[in-house]
Amino acid sequence: MFKKFTLINLFTFMTLGLAISQTTDSTSFEVVGSVDAYYRATFGADFDQAPATSFANLPGFSLGMANINATYYKKNAGVVADLVFGPRGEDATFLSPFLRPGGSSSIVNQLYAFWDVSDKVTITMGNFNTFLGYEVISPTGNFNYSTSYMFSYGPFSHTGLKVDADLGGGFSLMAGVFNPTDATEYNPTNDYAGGLQLGYSFDSGSAYLNTLVSDEFYQVDLTAGFDMTEDFYLGLNTTIAQDAFAGVAGYLQYALNDNFKLGTRVEYFQDNGVSVVGTDENIFDVTLTGQYKVGNLTIIPEVRMDKVSTPIYANELELEESLSSLVLAVVYGF
Image (cartoon, rainbow, N blue to C red):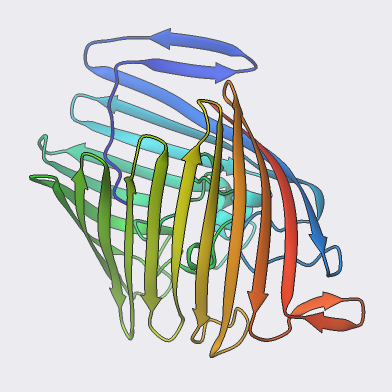
């Protein structure tokens, strides 16, 4: 999704409970990040069965990741280094380099430089998280702790060059050229993909139409969200990827008070060749999530039900079509 930098003249570094701040007129340095862990249990299937989605799928008490994201900005240019450690981070980077598993870049989630050509145009080059889809890699950026099928089988990151432009009137445009999807350190095939995003932001929300096109492949994706009232939020994601998958998901969240929110994600996912459950098979999943905030700590209880059109979940000596899961996660953002 389109992200526009909010540049502040504040240096903040927090580690082991220590916070340091520094302000200058033309330079800013910001370090943010998160740490997460969770407990996961299944019902009606073997203990190690999980939805075929990313990240929150390990049994018992499990680790998420530690994430450190540093941004340095001076005058009209800057750099971002985003590092991840732990199982969630390894899944997010696919143990880069692309053809050399276990290489040193397996901790690099994002690494790029950017130039604010004007207050309307930014040019970025390097490795950055995808603009497609509603959900993101960092658990601090999602309401639900577990992730959707559309997020899990779409691109995670791109390496290449992109231009973001503010067109005025709430409209924005991004255009870029990238390595093959998730080939984050270098291009192993000499093939390239093109990406476009048209965005519109208004007082209560935003919507983005995203496309990714390469040789014999395309993905078209729409994300939107808006505040229906002061307490109710509604989000939408729908996508189609050629000969791979298609799906739609709705997100509804309600704030009971300043510290506690409830939300649900309802998703339909059609396997058209990506081999999640089998070509022409489908999945319907419902996730109910709570978020309780204690300072920077978020406690996330979550119940999820996945119903597949063909039996895939092992239950002793049988296969089942449905799986129920319970997750209790903790996420600390700083």
